[in-house]
Length: 180
Image 1 (tube, rainbow, N blue to C red):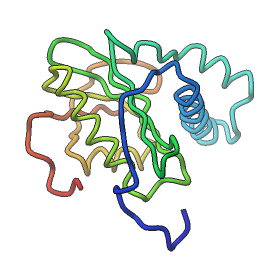
Image 2: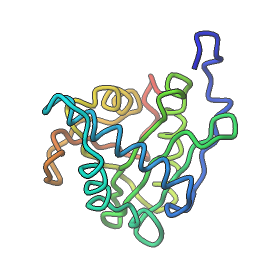
Image 3: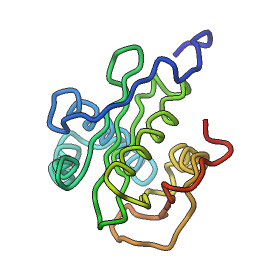
Image 4: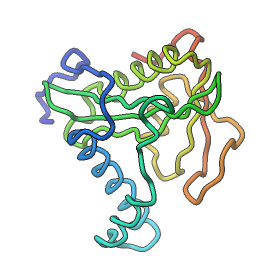
């Protein structure tokens, strides 16, 4: 976005979408390439190879982000798909937030906050009381977004090679004061 672009959530809409749709698959691929290349640059000083990216995508399917095991959300800015997030049902009270992504060109327009507000609504519609997530320490922008929207660090609930910090949020608690 250019410096003169209106910074508002008014142009954002977020709704449930088919995780297998072409739009969803394009965004999920961009998400994966973005986080994978950040990891490769930090640890190996280079971008991931095509083979590494394709292998990683194959090893990280998102098909469980559809009913009955989850929900996939697609955010549109100015009518175009620009963001996504998924919720995976862990138990009767808890869902896991995953695949949170806003395209670089749309960052700073309020899309992350609008996406997380829709995540809260979707979690409540599933009957969840709590949202949890894991992420990497180097994803500082995402961690700041979560903190601004009421997520707090929690003890580890999962393990994996990229799970370095864990967050949780009570979806029935009043919105965090800084969240807009």
